[in-house]
Length: 617
Image 1 (cartoon, rainbow, N blue to C red):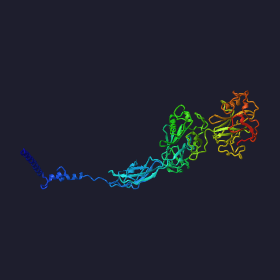
Image 2 (spheres, one colour):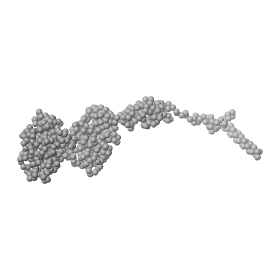
Image 3 (cartoon, one colour):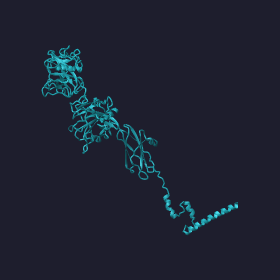
Image 4 (cartoon, helix red, strand yellow):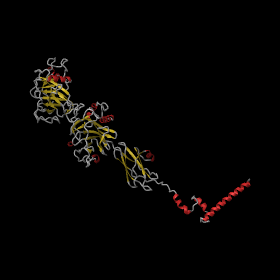
């Protein structure tokens, strides 16, 4: 058995040696390497597949791996931060160097606490850096989306193409600016070019940056942009006027960019306010509109206004509803597009124009016309129409003194038919424009006009003296109670508003019974008093009886009936018995007059008596 194994082993060795000898012979035949070189074993050791040095030397150099880049970029050494606005900070630095040339990028982070360690850096909020520039170039980036009046810390590090990060920069800090708050203070939606065109005026109620605040005009569900404010810082009380006149091709001076209230030289620019110009050239819509100041999706303020012309559009009602839902305007119930839109329109600012026409939905005309505007009562903001009134426009300056457009009330307090004087006392302040005083109005007949009141802003307890039948050209007071002093205008009263009526029929007759009534601008009778000399008997069914019935029916004169039936000459009491007696009044304004006990005393004959004149007091 062992002999057989030895034979096999010997045979295998022999075969192997034979093969090797053959291979050597072939190499020699092909002109192989020097016989003194053990070439086959050297080649095998190099791992080049048995090729000679001439064939494999170049491949060795190519296949040899380059050493890895482990050198990081230089550190950003001059990072600086500057607050740009309430929501952004600007960072600047110089691009650092890298051993390979330029860096590949940056990692930028911020936090509200200092960033002084790598752990703090990695835990901070990531911000988008700019593309890397060549070493030594100035780099800058603005980080948005920050919170107003907050200190932020920033740090940065550079990265090369191999992914090596440089050392962390120093921590730098900046505090964002305060956010300004703007209130809509004036709206002029019906101006003509001669009056400067339409505009919206804003007043700052909190100092800070107004950057990116949007002033919008909604007549549709999606509001139209009037103007987006630039990076302007304002102080409390600063005003911004948005001129809705179309931005001219020559380029208007936008003072939110210049920061200079006097840089605009355009017509109607205010040196007291920042003037900006909307590209909208069509002006403002005067009915069913909403002006808003938007901070992103949040309302800073909103003011709806309307001509109260029956039903508003679905789009306008949606705009009103959005303001109501956001708490920017208060409605009794959420506006909904329906046939009952008038209830909603009566709760927005009255922008009825032209003056004198009554709104279809009811209420007062607003007397808004070109040259006048809807003005806020200072900075009062109850989010209701009571905050606004109509006055001569004050673009860029403080608003006119507040005078409620609606709601004034008057009482008749003294009369002298011989002197043709009627005194009224204001019991609730407001504008008296559009009020009329009439004689003997009755159902279906507004009687005889005695006087139309001038646009006086009456304060509670103010006194108005009507001079009936005044000569043509006699002036009336509109700005102050001593505007026309008695020293220059005999018969006027320095402590009262003097109003001259030039109507030829504006007189009273002593020898008759009559009713004097006050009618407000919406056409409602709000005050009445019956008078008689108690000698002549009024005609049954005549003007006096009809006027007395109207006053009684409206609750303006008591009692409401004569023993449960309509008052006539035959009832008990008679229609004349219900009148206040002015028997005994004097011939002039200085003599006795018929006076009411007080402006709030009962509206009945017992409240009146004849005594010394007290007109204008």
